[in-house]
Structures are given as C-alpha cells and as structure tokens.
Amino acid sequence: MINQDRLVTSFCALAAIDSPSSDEKEVADFLMEKLKRLGLTVQQDSYGNIIATDEGDSPILLSAHMDTVEPGRGIKPIVDSERIYTDGTTILGGDCKAGISIILEAIESLADEGLERRSIEIVLSREEELGLLGCKELDFSLLKAKEAIVFDGEGRVNQITSGSPTYLAFDIDIKGRAAHAGVEPEKGISAIKIAAEIIVQLQLGRLDDQTTMNIGSITGGSVRNAVPENASLSGEIRSHDEEGLDKVKSYLLNILQDTRNRYSDAVITEKFNTEFQAYKIDPQEPVVKDVIDQLIRSKMDPELILSGGGTDANVFRSNGINAVVLGVADHGAHTVREHIIISELVEAASFCRDLLAINHKI
Image 1: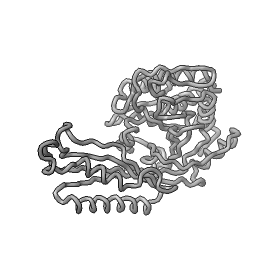
Image 2: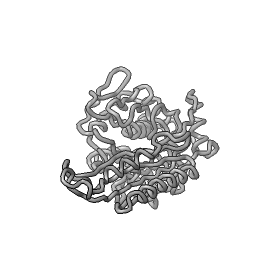
Image 3: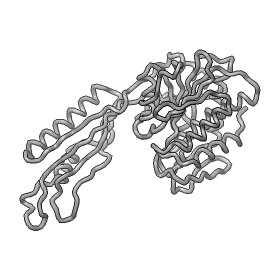
Image 4: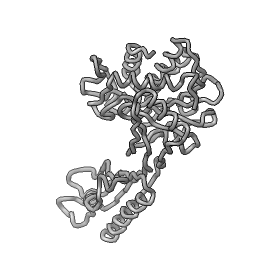
C-alpha cells in the first residue's frame, strides 16, 4: 500500500532541491543515493543522466526528468489537506519531480510489503526542458528495455498522451545598416523594422487542429539614437501532420524571400532545427494495452489525449523503445500557479506499484 505521508515528504524534499536545467548535480547526487538504498545498481552516463537497474531480464523502463524551469530556485512547498503548491514566487517543480516521486514510492511500497516486482530500469534525464537534450545524449547501449512508461504528463495518471508533434525550431537573423537616428536616418536600414514587417505577415498561434506557430523572442538594436543594424527572431512550428508542417515552413520561407526582395541591401538568414519528431501511439501496442488494462482494473477510465508538447518519450521512440506518457497529478506546469493534487499523486503511485507487481507482465 502506498504510504501517502512518505510520498508527500519525498516529493517536497525533491522540490526543495534547486535543479533548473543544466544545474541538476545536487538533485542527481541525492537521487543516486536514494536509488542505491533501494537496492538498484546506479550509474551516470557521460552526459549526467541517471540510469538505475536491478539487472534482471526483460525490464520495463520507468522515466522522468530531473530539471525544472525557472523561476525554480528556493522552492518552498506548501502542503494542505488536498494540495501541494508554493507561495506564488516560484514554480513547484511537479514537472517532473512528481514523476520521480511516483516511481520511488512504487518501488519502496512493494519492498515494504515484501512483494516481488518485475525487473526495472530507471532513467532520470537532465536538461529535458531545454529540448530533451539529456535524453538525446542518453547512452542507449546501457539499456535493455524495449518498453517504457514516462511519468511526465499533466493531470491524473489516466491521462495518456496519444501523440506528440514534430517540433521545428527556427532562428532568423537580420542585418541592416546602422546610422545616426537624428542626423542621417536616411542612410540607415532598420533591422528592427524589417523584423516587425516579417512578424506582422505571420499567422501565429493555433493554425489548425494539428499545427501551431509562435515567435518566442525578439532582440535587436543597441542604443536609442542609432538606426538598429541587427535584430534576431526565434520561433517554432509544431505539427502532428508532416505535410502541414512543411507547408508552414514554406510559407515562412516565402515571407522571408519577399522581405529580401524589398530590402535588397539587408542580409536576412534563417536556420531550422528539428528538435524532436512526432509520434502517435497504437492502443494495441503491448505497453499501451497493458497500461489501459491496469487503469481499468484500478477503476479509472483511460483518456487518450493528443499533446502539443514533447517529452523524453519522443526520443525513446526514435530509438526503438515504445514509450507511453502518463499524468503525474501536476497542474499548471511552468507557472507559479503550479500545484499537485495529493489524492491524484497517491493514485499515480498506486498505479505504478500495481503495474510493477510480479504477477503483472507486459
């Protein structure tokens, strides 16, 4: 049986350890000691991802990530009878320390009861929030598992991510010509004006039920009284439809070319990078079917929900491991309003425990 007090205490202890992306060493050290105490063989790969195993045959992979977004330093979890939250000055870090806590409690609960469990591998990745960087650098030669459960979704554990989009990042750099803004502005070419004209032409937000586009940042200029010579834009296109993604990319390229034609003395360059590839799960995949069956046995209705985000499951699937993402009781992730519903956290840990029980095989 899940120990609710231990689960909540474990989560709060993890949340209180600062671990913004690229600064996971302290939480990694803490977790490695914890996993060793649970009897697992623990190591870090060359990138700093944690890999723990009981060295058994046909393991199931359990995964979550160690890093959090900002503002994620000095987190002080507040616990009441129903929720865990903060004072509103920081995030909570439920994304994804709730996932880690669920995995740890499930293993510890089975050990408390003296029950056998199926063989496991655990991957706790770094820098997931920076574009799945840790998992992309994961040493997959250290893994045996062919199926994975990634505890990194929002909401209840019965919320199954049915698909994830391809994520195409882009950067646009503009070089105009500097000039004194008051004395001879006619000699200048404003890079910021060019950037603004590009943005105005773009359709942003949700383009259709499969595709989104966003400009996330714009920088440029140097001083108030100079025509700005440089400006940069960074943005993204996400789509569950590869053809639709290509159409939006072409649409953007056409706008850039039209802008070059109008500003022939300016230099406009663009760079694209696919951060992760789309996937859609098949409900008949063994790991997915098993999750659904266990949810039904636990008297929960499985909800397959298409996601607009990416997780380490995108990378696992690209490397031949069938992964499914489940909710971790976290709500309002990446905001200072983030909170965990305690009953849902217990529910998720109970689900993980039952899935690992020795009489339960994928």
